[in-house]
Length: 434
Image (tube, rainbow, N blue to C red):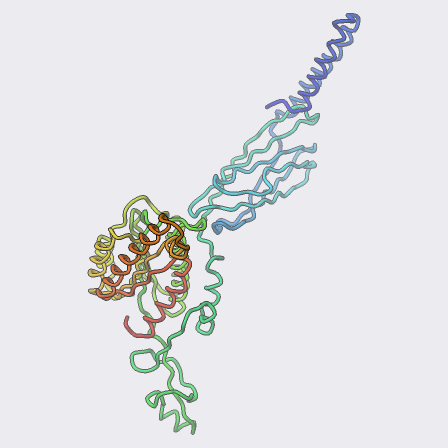
C-alpha cells in the first residue's frame, strides 16, 4: 500500500498551515484538532483499502496468434461487493509484445461487470505467457492505493504471419495460380494420372482421343490427364547462423518458413505428402503426410523454431534424410550459403541424389544487388563493386557445379522465394522427373 497524490497534497497543506502557528501560538489548538481529524480520516481510508476487493477476473484471447499482427485481448472484471471501486488495471502481457490501451483506469460500480479490451502485437514466433493481472485499488477518499495481484496465467503460441502468404494461398488453385506469377505447366500423355474425359479441343494430340467414348457420343472425346499424385515433398530447412540475416525487419529463416508453408499448401492441394527436417543447431523431423492436416502439422512443429548461432552441416543432414526418408522424394534445401559452405553442400547433394530429386534454394542478400545497381563514383565504390562481382561469380560457379551434380538450383532474394518455389515444384510435377 502506498500514499496517493491526495494524501501527499493533504500533508503538504497541513505542513504549510503550521507556519502561522509559529507567529500566532493561539492557533496551535485549532491546528492540532485539524491534524488529528485528518489523521483519523487517513487511517480510516487506509483500513478501507487494505481489504482484498471482491473481484472475479477472466481473460479472453486467442491462444494461437500471428507474429507482427495486432491481436485483441479482453479482461472481464466482475465486482461482487457493495461499494464502487476506483481501479487501475495492468495485465502482465508477455515481454517483447507491443501493446495498446494498457494499463487501464475505470470506476466499477457494485454488482457490475466491466470489460477491458486492449491489443498486443508479438515481435517473434514461439511460446509466450500472460502471467497475471495487477489491480490497483484507489481508496474511497483517494489518499491510498493498494496493489493486488491476481494469478491468471494464459499460454499463447505465436505462429508465422499467414497474412504475409495469405494472398498466395488464396490464389494457389489450379485456375488462379497465374495471378501470383506461377506458370502452370500441364503435360498430357503417358506418365500422368488420368483425370477426366472432355470434348476434344484444338491442339489435343491424337493419342488423347478416347475412340470408344467418341463412338458412343458421336463426337470427339479426349482424355485429360493430371500430374501424378501421392508423391513426396521433403523440406530440408537450414536453421543455422546464416539464416539469421535480417532484411526489412525479417530474418531469412522467417521468410523461408513462409515460402515453405505456401508450397506445402500447394503440394497438399495436388495430393502430395509433405514433410520436413530442420538442421543447423535445431533438429526437428516430421515425416511426409498428406491432406489438409499437413500444413497444420508443419506449423505446430516449426512455429517456435529459431535460427541458432551454429554452423549448418549439410552432409550430416543429408545422411539423416537418407536414413529417415526411404521413399524417393523431392528434397528442397532452403539455405543461405557462403563460399566456404559449398564443398559441404555439394557432398550433401551427391548423397541425396542417389535416391531423391534435389532442389537447392539458396537465398541471396538484397544488399548485393543494391551495390551493383549503385553508380561507381570513386575508388571505394569501385572496389566494392568489383568485390561483389567477384563474390557473385564465385557463387554462380558453385551453383553450376551443383547443377552438374543433378540438382535444380535457385539463386534468389528472399521475397522472390515463394513464387519461385511453387514454380519449381510445378515444373518438376509436369516434367515427370519425380
